[in-house]
Image (cartoon, rainbow, N blue to C red):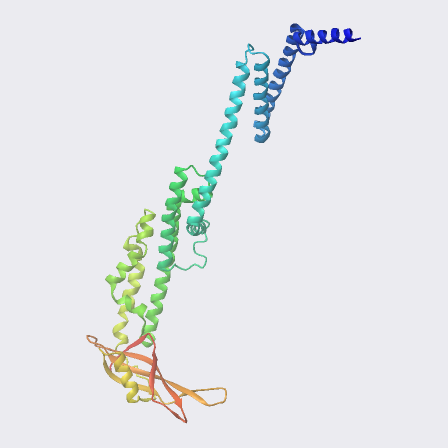
Length: 375
């Protein structure tokens, strides 16, 4: 029995020497060839699967196929170092390059998205404003903009120049890039639209000033600027200088001709207005304290007369006790170098103090004045 065990052990050692599980070299080689063939099929299957998944943009599974192709080549080379894997390696390298190109594209896309977000954060106000201009909501109420609004638009358009440079330098794909590229066209459209509204609005306003001057001689700070034609012309030109330059469309002074003509017609009414006496009737001479307030306010003017209305408006508290009273007043003033007078309206006030009213003083002057004669 012991001899049998020894004989069996020798046989096992011999089989082990010949190959795995006692196979001969020939049998082992045949088995390796079969595995190589299997691995070739595995490689081919994954190569075809890779092409399909690339077509389906299924890049996660495509990477899985590339890994399997790599593993198949390495197994073949291990089993048969003399096997020519050049064709397989070429297909694998092509697949690997496609995968690497996709990864680079994704990384570039992520970087571009990050840059686009940063760009939008930096210029979000400008982008939003120009988007509104581009969609035709540049003027919802049909009225011209204030000068500060025009300056704000010009700044926004200039900011989009920075956006355009970022888009070109980094090949960004963002809606703001298209917006930035057409900003000069947008500027021209805004300029033409606002200019038309502005001219029409100013002509209408000046006609209103002319009517007020003809009716009661009223002059406001805005209407008084119409007498200086040269300054008015410069101011009109300056309004659209920046926007016109940005749009490559400077605005000639001729575009403002209707405004300048209306200003001349307004000025022509002035001689008529200055011949009319406008000192209010039924008013009495103002107290000395009120006259003193008027002279202190208009130190350079010759104070001709100061009057106040005889009746008072009384303000009371919750207990019906007077707090103060006020009345209207008017001062006839002649400024140096002027042949006419200005009638300046004001409010006079008396504060109630312990059973009687205090001293009368001017509370406030109205901003406008009336052109009139000095009689």
